[in-house]
Image (cartoon, rainbow, N blue to C red; front, side, top):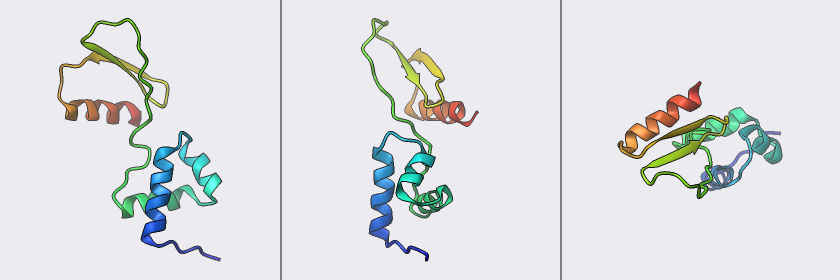
Length: 98
């Protein structure tokens, strides 16, 4: 039997995924849905699955003008903070695409 969800249920499902610290596949197993269904809901409501990862900011002795970004795939990006937000978003997109 096909489960039909209304817009409110889909929004709650997407928000729930965004708040959990699990992989997309694990979340879908927990919810009993296919990953393609989650992706479809995301496209339908303008949400981009897997686009961003949770990051943990740890206080480490570093120069004041540098930062480190550790991506979900384990890659680490260290740089100065002397560029625009759009450039940072592009850097993350490129790093996670590989």
